[in-house]
Image (cartoon, rainbow, N blue to C red):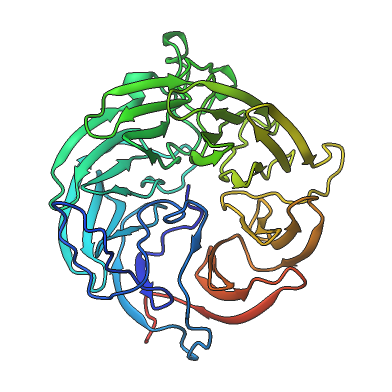
Length: 422
């Protein structure tokens, strides 16, 4: 789930560049003109950890900030765009239509758009637009709307290939902020967090999740080409974190930080390995930060109560490496919507529930010991690139911060707005 209010403008800035790859995808024309760089085809990038392999980024910014390439007015929503083969896919809402626009990524020129009707209304008056970014996989792009509609479209022209109403099909009781978990592609499957309930729970009003039970559809794997269900797994309700795939002990794993805790399973067949309870007792609390996997260790964090924990997992079982003390107010890390980033034995992320109290923080991966913590930056997200973090705060402040476990090291900063002159 994205953690920034839409400002009505999308701006692409010259920090990294899209690439022309050597592995051309059959049937998908490559619209890129640049010859180096990487694409960003889904949530948190090509490796799912918000890290870019780019090198040689601009570290000395002009007084007006990095060059503004193009901008476009947005509808409602929190979904960030995805970029693949010279196409930028942006999912938002205009009046009663959920809309996907496909733009030429280097110019912003409209290539095509797809719309469907939506009646989603946020229970707390936040945006009624989508929360999940588009997921691009070769000739297909997948959308998962706030109301639970799952679509598969053709990349080249937006033709709908298949769709599933997950709320109707699996009996989903509306979560506090709708659907906000971006799916992932694993082989020939699309793995989706659904969190449906049995018929007896389906008349419970939205938001009363303390009265709702699971029907074993925490995760639903679909055939990515047809939309047919491959398997259903997990006795959990949905959260706002996305499934995370990893390989440990030469086996594929799927880690889902669901509403009640960490669900660990085999993504090939849905067999559940274990469930690690981790959630605040507050009814309206949410788990929204993706698990971070490094080697055979998995980090989870939330901001409403228990804080963070690090687990070691493998074929022989699992164990707790460390966890925040539930009796202590101070926690190692309490991520709200952002997913922290691991760099060389340290974890960097925005810790704190509210705008006024959030801190950008660095902790030691192995122990949770706080290395430094900086208040006053608002809630923010990070992207790691070339030894630096691109740090975006929720009200438009953009910073470049050097990855340094010893101290907070600001390199450059600027603020973008619709009236920006550059």
